[in-house]
Length: 331
View 1: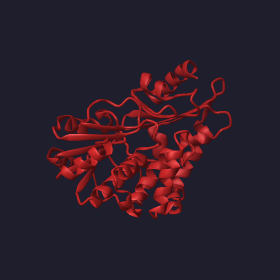
View 2: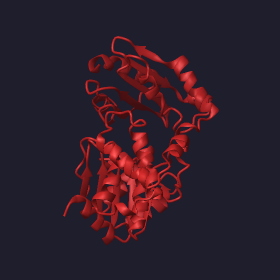
View 3: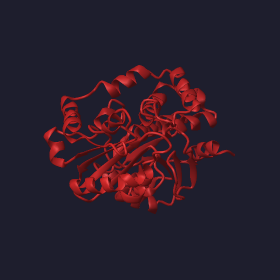
View 4: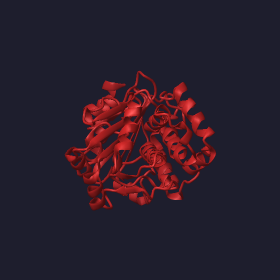
C-alpha cells in the first residue's frame, strides 16, 4: 500500500479527526487545512481544524468557521485533541512549531498522527510521514493525496480554492524556484475543477488598507538599510512604529519580497517587535544564497533555503547589530 492509500485508509478508519498547522498561520497552512477538511468531508467523514492562533486578516475571505483557535478557545482545542483518534500535522515538521500549549497536547497524544509537509529536515514524531521537500507547498501535497488515493473526481471548487490559495502564497505568486512542472500540472487540475483563480488573486492583492500602505511606505522610506558589500536589504520595525500605523497581523508580510525586487539584492531581512520578541523574516534569491542556515544557527528558526523565519529576544537595536555582524559570514 502506498503512502497515499495508507492516509486514505487512516481517514476511513477514524471517528474524530483533528487537522493542525503551525503557529503564525499563513496561506499554505490555512489553505491546506481547509482543503484537506473539505476532502475528508467528501469521503463521508468529519474533521475539525485546530490552529494555534489567528491567520492574517487578508485570508479571512475564506470560510474559516471550521477553524478552532488555541489562543481563543483552549478548552475546545484541548478537548478535540484529547478525543482525536487521528491527527494531521500540516505544513510543519517539528512539534515546537505549534507553540508550547499545543505542543504539549500533541506530544501527549497516543493516537495515529500524519505529517504532510514540504520543509527540510522533518522530525520523526508522526506515525505516517508524507514529506516532499521539493514540493512547492503543503497544499500541492494535498492535491497529490486526493489524486494518488484515487479520488480526483471529488475535487471541486470548495476543496480546490483554499488549495490554490496555499500554492499561490507559498510560491510568491509562482515566482519562486520551488515552482516545478508538477506545480503547474496541479494548478491545471484546480482550474479544471472550477477554482476562480482571478478572484483569489483579487482577494489577496487588492485588499490593502490605508494604514498598511502607510506603514510599508514608512518602512521603505525611513527604515530601509542596504548592505551594499553583500547586497542584503534590512528593515526593522519597533512595536511603537507598528502601533503608530495601526499594525494588523500580516501588514508587513510583503515587505521582504518588496526588498528583493530592488535590483541586485541577494537577500532581504525584515524583523518586527511583537509579543516581546523580534520576529524575523528572511528571503533570498538563488541556490548560492540560502537563508535558512543563518536563521537556524543564530535565530532559533529555519525553513526553506530561500524563505525562512526566526526570532530574537534582544532589543531592536541589538538584533540589528547582530544581523549586521553575521551577514558578511553568510553572503
